[in-house]
Amino acid sequence: MDDRGTSNHSEVTDFILVGFRVYLELHILLFLLFLLVYAMILLGNVGMMVIIMTDPQLNTPMYFFLGNLSFVDLFYSSVIAPKAMINFWSESKSISFAGCVTQLFLFALFIVTEGFLLAVMAYDRFIAICNPLLYTVQMSTRLCVQLVAGSYFCGCISSVLVTSMTFTLSFCASRAIDHFYCDYRPIQRISCSDLYIPNVVSFFLCSIIILPTIIVIIVSYIYIVSTVLKIRSTEGRKKAFSTCSSHLGVVSVLYGAITFMYVIPDRFPELSKVASLCYTLVTPMLNPLIYSLRNKDVKEALRKILGKKLFLFNSVLTENRIK
Image 1 (cartoon, rainbow, N blue to C red):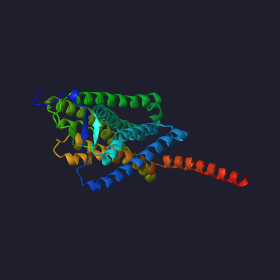
Image 2 (image 1 turned 90 degrees about the vertical axis):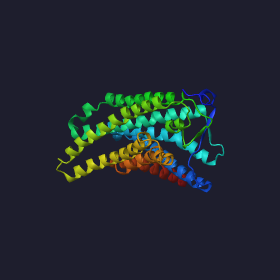
Image 3 (image 1 turned 135 degrees about the vertical axis):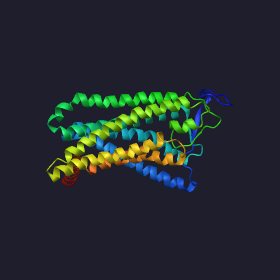
Image 4 (image 1 turned 180 degrees about the vertical axis):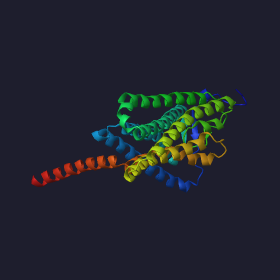
């Protein structure tokens, strides 16, 4: 490693998250925007998990995976958004070394897990549409748990590698990370180490994470589309395409932004921040909206829950009037 007046990572106690390079007056607007989006993420994903856990009719593989997707979305956005909102009002915009390590580790864990979960969900739709008679046999409870556990395991391994590789670098005098959270590419920019090996390793990791999951998704949907086109019923075709189009929309936004951020050469820091917003805030906000508004089962389950709450509320009012 180079030693051009650098300080080793062990001497670094904190970093500065530069955030968005905008006028100070716009910080209030950005804070309100982040707050609104994060509130929708909390409401949407917690609501989705509650609906799935409380309605017995949603006790199927598809909703098991969807519940885990909501859990992942909720947690990795919570790793990013609160600290970003605090920094809009903070003059120092600092984050401790341990805090930066934790943020990168958790973010990498959940974002990689989400990629594998989306591939699992594509495979689930492939079995459901192309082999409906064997669906309950092939997508057993044991297999579903193994697929989800495997997604978290891959996320954990990737996160350990990325985090350890990033924070064994040596850092220059500057501690300013030109981003709104701790991510390995912006952190590499302030490093004085030779980045050849870290770049090769990160490219290899991106390749073995993004390529297999995209291949599974594309192949699954090729078979799905060919099967759906053979359905004679217009209603059946519409239902199948409705379920799949929502999934494809999420996949396109997530993978498009991640490809721009981690595969394309890092030459546009400000555009990278905008791309990061797509998968740190926009995707977690859209997922519950897409899967609930375009899903009859979820809407029906939501009506039942709201109906029970309304019934209980009316019962309490009635009892109070009698008293």
